[in-house]
Length: 209
Image (tube, rainbow, N blue to C red; front, side, top):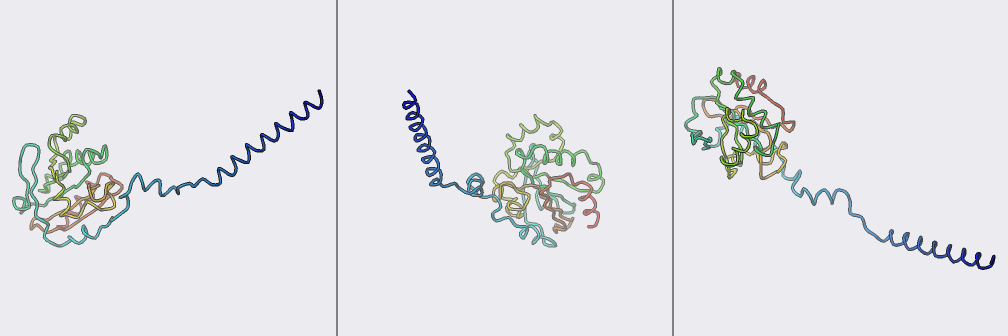
């Protein structure tokens, strides 16, 4: 009986050793993709072509021409806004909740912009129909002047599609302000990756015009 038990133990130990060897050497032959490669596969464009050069290059230059409409069909263009100070707030629109939405609403509730004869346009790359969903979710948005750049042509002219604040470089703006004086000259630009409410800053800058 003792001999049978000893043989059984030896066989069992041998089997365990064989299994352990298979796992060890099999594991060493497996290749593991670097963490950066895995991340790049999810966000292939993240961090590429990000620059403030185009945005900053507009300073003290005539603003690019633009033509935008609001939900009611009212036209806002570089021509009919001459003689007024204009702030364009380029943002990600529907996808940027709550940061962009809060900034848009804060413009509508801040009387200082009206008192200083400033026209604030929040520019989104959404359709008028889709924007209704945002208003249903946050009714205060209906009080703001939101204009639609569905094909991103205006955003592209102003160089705001690949700024550091953009989470989808090349496709969507992030959180960027362009201030234009009454003569149609770009006097101030600010890209804000922190996506804060910047009313105080903008009022201060426009007052310098």
